[in-house]
Image 1 (cartoon, rainbow, N blue to C red):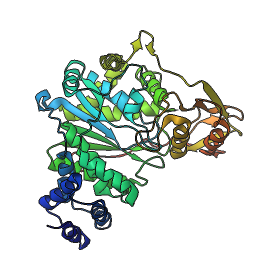
Image 2: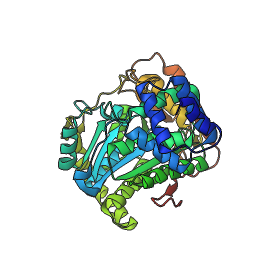
Image 3: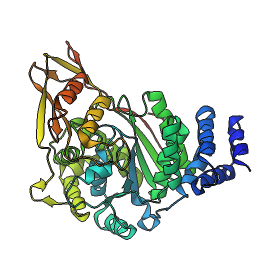
Image 4: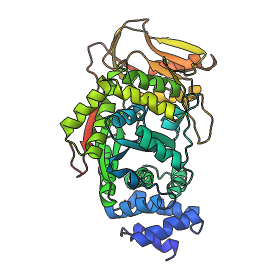
Length: 437
């Protein structure tokens, strides 16, 4: 069938067959389908949508367009976790060792950050010596011996998704639930885990700005998992303000380690424990309350932090008796409160943008980043602040941007004259049956 005829099927509101989706998508990867034809195809999806069956077909085709990791030799205890992207979201650094300390085999491939959202691989590469470019033999060996491994995605993991996403980014076709869901799930399916926990971020610093859209995305991904023989649970978590206090690669790694040692922010620990409990429940087949108990025990006993250190060393990272030795920014500039009040909100998007412009993020794939720089928040929603009190610290490579970044950071804060409750962390959950709670 000609590409124009395939596009016309969706233009007219009809459903594609799996063969039509496969021929069109793989034709695009091979070059037989032109960019302008795929752009029209994507726009048709944005306008007309896709059925659950079409979305699952698209996911499977994208996953099978490249390498497929087969984890079946590890049994059914394998689990993966993915976040839809946020500011200060370093939960993978905690969830991996927590779940592994409970007996889950965490086999995870992660990507790099783009724009104001951080990437797990960028964070891990701030640890001297840490290797993310593992061979498949090394990947499997570490899963078996340590119980957790996080590596960079192989160059040929879901190449159809990479090529389609690059086109979506320049054709106004990013905000489509079927396209977002299939993009995320194609990489998870290709990575091979039997059990998948998804963290859908909701709020100003996330792609999903309403609870309704977050639930729609969550249900779409759970449906894909069910159709492709994966067990998928989605947790919807808050991203109106940064998660934790640290935003920036080395700063976030340090905060993750400190949180596992019982010295980190409560919101980061809470979200990480919720996600870890879901991984334990799915992978080990225990009830929710038992999974939560095992997670609390792993953190409280120090087993999770011990597993963190074992994992870092196993992938070549330097981790001495006193912990991680991470590079620090040469300039650390406090930002002071100009009034006495209660913090009512901290705009996650602005904080992420400030950290990125200091050098912690990139505007385009492949750009270098500075692992040392970022922002550490000292005042967060619900806190009472006095005039002149530090509300944050800018960690910068030099002083050239300090005045501008300090002003922007101050503007990210909203204030109240009366006490403010801390924000809700968990906005909902969609289980493997598609039920919303």
